[in-house]
Picture (cartoon, rainbow, N blue to C red):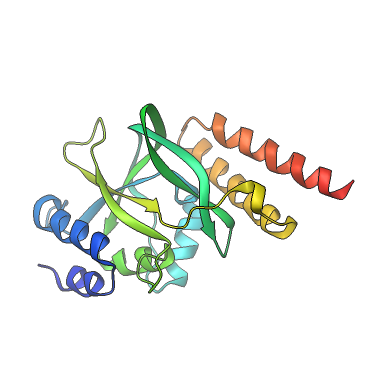
Length: 200
């Protein structure tokens, strides 16, 4: 087992740690088995933000080998509490649903930076790792599922402003990869309407 993975695994909650270790033992990618494959469906589709965030966490890298993909039987919702964004996206199992996003590689050297920025390595993690099967990928990939449910209705004005900026960043990324973002545009309208109503 790679040292970077073992080190990161020690800092993770049990469920995420088990998923990472199983994934690493069975599905590592690349010529030297040095990449993890990941499905991103929120602001991580915005490569400028992604690179900036990973760099800030210690090892900057972009969205290598990125391709548009669809995760079946899930919905994307703006429903995970986030200190930085007010609310962040998560996924929820939903038969017949689908989530468009991108699959991309995460180099082992960047794994800690990525997990740290997502709050997976904190004592009270914001997200947990799960493994999913995605059409077009020859093996399972990793993705994130939120652990702190929250809703737009309970946000104050400042948090809604943060959430709106976050949704706009996600839309920019989605459009770059030609990912269907109709649900994102609806959320943007909802937040703008709420903020406008609060001003009146």
